[in-house]
Amino acid sequence: MERILIVDDEVNVRKLYSEELAGEGYETVSAATIDEAIASIDDELPDLIILDIKLKEESGIDCLVQIVERHKNLPIIINSAYSVYKDNFQTWAADAYIVKSMDLTELKETIKKLLSKKDQPKS
Image 1 (cartoon, helix red, strand yellow):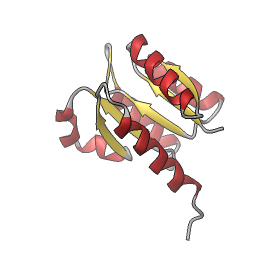
Image 2: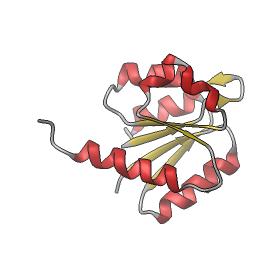
Image 3: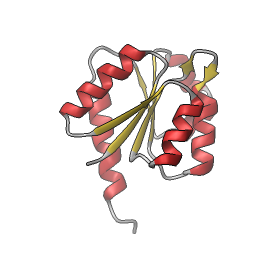
Image 4: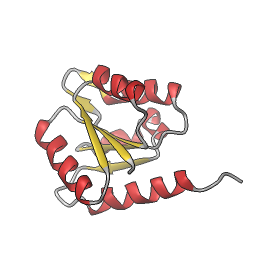
């Protein structure tokens, strides 16, 4: 079962995503802070990360940079309510950028696409 780490400071978002993704057959773990996210990654490397940009007083971009430095091939989806960060070159290190919505169709499709790419043999 593929494991997805959800990094978001809003507990309701973490719960919603966990329930929706569990219904799609994924195992999920959640983190509200950068420290929790890094600890979770170090404890058991997930197959994919969904990362919010605004984490209370912390920056999801800082978290993104730390993750990419450690795990270059780990798929990361930035999932933010703010589309303005798409223009920040640091967010380009993520594999996808999705603006939050009540409809999780785009997020689910992007997860499937990125995980299927991860499973393909490198040529």
